[in-house]
Length: 161
Image 1 (tube, rainbow, N blue to C red):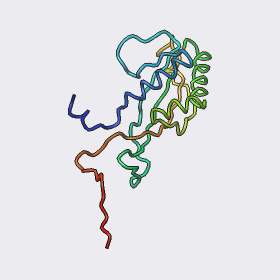
Image 2: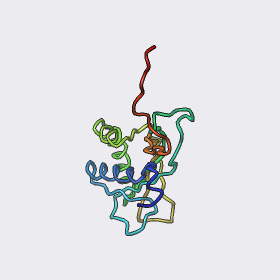
Image 3: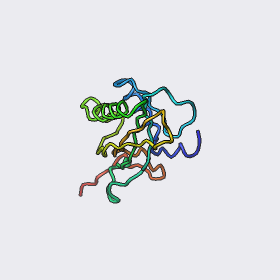
């Protein structure tokens, strides 16, 4: 195990795994990491990017060792035409707001806080065979770091006087 893994800080790969499984199970859409390596799948598909990985909620807020923080992630749908891509994006938005989706996310300590507006992300005349539409979402996450340099008090004895 690498030294940095011993610290036990938040593993951002969890977000990729949870959203990839969710979008495939509910919409049969493949989710890829934005700017990742390899071949792109056939359209329609979705790219995922963590654009703001750590936003403190409150500098004084601390819930035991597992402090909550927020992150902003980006979902971008790729489609063969603009109409299809808009439809895919709206389907993703609706899926993320479903009750059973919130339960799935909660099981992985993920809470959807906010979804920003949908916007067209295609670059005119650069990529004519793929259209891009997407939105960003703000998530509340729980840090998994524990300070192993501090001893935990397991028992406290009281003296009666």
